[in-house]
Amino acid sequence: MNRTLISYLLSFALLAASPLVLNRFWLEVLNSVGLYAILALSLNVILGNAGLYNMGHAAFYAVGAYCAAILNTQLDIPILWSLPICGLVAAAAGALVCRPIIHLRGDYLLIVTVGVGEILRIALVNDIFGLTGGPNGIFGIDRPFLFGYKIRKPHEFLYLIWGFVAMTVFLFYRLRNSRFGRALDYLREDEVAAEGSGINTGRTKLMAFAIGAAWAGMAGALYASKMTIISPESFTFWESVLIFIIVIIGGSGNITGVLLGAFLIIGLPEFLRAYVGEFANARMWFFGLAMMIMMIFRTQGILPPGPRFFRLPKAGKEVSS
Amino acid sequence: MDLVIKDLKVKYGNVEALHGINLRVEPREIVTILGANGAGKSTTLMAISGLVPACEGEILFNGMALHKMKPHQVVKTGVAQVPEGRRVFGTLTVAENLHLGAFTTRDAAKEIKTRDWIYELFPVLKERREQLAGTLSGGEQQMLAIGRALMADPKLLLLDEPSLGLAPLIIKRIFDTVRQINEAGVTVVLVEQNARAALKLAHRGYVLEVGNIVLEDQASTLLSNEDVQNAYLGGH
Image 1: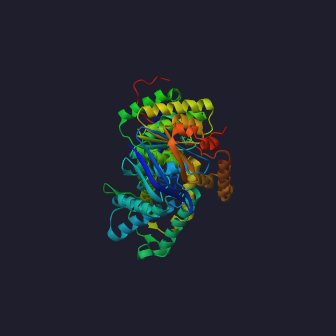
Image 2: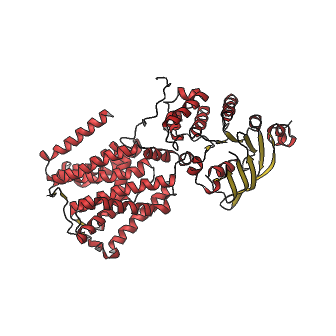
């Protein structure tokens, strides 16, 4: 635990110092990694902890982004104030969508979530309720204000986004070690045995979905204010796949693994683009190959969750081992 | 703390697995349900614990209508099931598996007391409490499954085929422990293919045949019943 904490603190300190040495391009890459890290961490609750295959996560991302954009452009609500609202709306969307399909398992659930993501994207393109601006999307979204200070430059966003990542890591770490986190573990391992031990499996799954969706929604709000313009193109099936891949490659269920996955999947192609020179055009090819090799030789991800250590109630007469 | 089942019918899709069975378990009793494969023994247990819905009829435990409850609510009424094939969490340790069993109790002191009792019943679980459950032998996993169910502090314990795939010596040890658990005040419903061992342990028994109860009597009477002997005890 202490070693993990120290490496986390070091990494975040490095990130905080990075504007001193990195140019705008790399700072933007880091921001992108940070946004995907939030998205992947939120999917990790659903996919990694609860074991529910969700390949429509971009839908909740979109709900949050559009919610923030509409609230901001129509009602002039500042982005950061709208964060909790976006989270709640996305959570409600997640719960609503999942209520009827929550009993589905594995691949069946996956196919339905793909469908949900596509339905939402097409609804956005068709300017649903006249609110979403159709294929052009919504533009003119405000930058976020923090304590009266306008966040605009890449390094300012770096602190905002990675601050949010840090908070997410802390909260999800706590969540994973809570009673609810334990319930998710049991649920993923054996649903019948979990149910037979008194876990309300339906409600627990729904909660996992709602929490994951809420966080994706807030990531969407941050994204909207960073880009100042959003359109359905940003929330395609490919986005869902990308988030899914980050969780699986990084090590589903492990927070550190998921963060590492975000760096690899989002950062590596940019790195290849910048440094491989004439091979730049082949970077997606390298990338795909690396993913295939990974899935053959290390199916559990780069950093799978280690054995779990729960704080169990101590008994007085337990022998020491 | 009695369990009363009235005209229980259970369907899997269009197939009726139980055609209206009646069954009664008195407090502190061990009742065994015997029958061949597909007779509906496991279905009966799963209907009690709510894992399959009752299509008609009633299941009353202590006056509470279990047939209207979800599985996690049934657990809270004091009914715990040891599912067939054990289903322990292989990637968690023995202690963590037991911790799960106490998911519904939030009283840590009580949890420790129950756990110490389980460690007394099955000392091997205490020895292996830091070991992953998946690395235990079949018999130890069965003990763990029973222990996990007991962690919920049940008044009624449902055991589904605890002897499945185990050596005779282990079966005897597990059945002896079931008797101990019963003597501590827990009512037991035992579903078994190993009819002889089950009847020796139980007070009363029911015989299920393709979804109907065809026989009901004291265990000792069933043991000497010629039909039962021919059908389930290998005959003579």
